Image 1: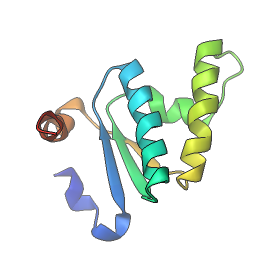
Image 2: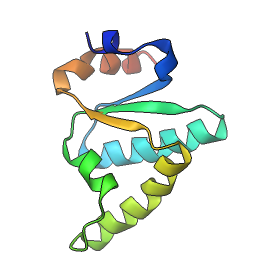
Image 3: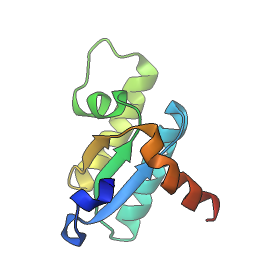
Image 4: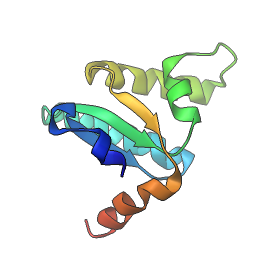
Length: 103
């Protein structure tokens, strides 16, 4: 299982299973909340391979709405000490989705 490769010293994890827009909003909200509560998220797991690339390198050809999003999320990632963003298969997120349903 995925978490067998990590230990408690790796810090808090964030699993995101959502649509493109949902992923972005979840990322913003979670990073803001973790900062407000002094929690350090060190690993983020997503199922969209575009996300790590998008936030690590700003392409001058990005449309204005993506640039706005990048400019909003990059400072949050920076203030969170630039957590590692891992792309994983959607099937691996099933457990976190089931847990989220129960609150």
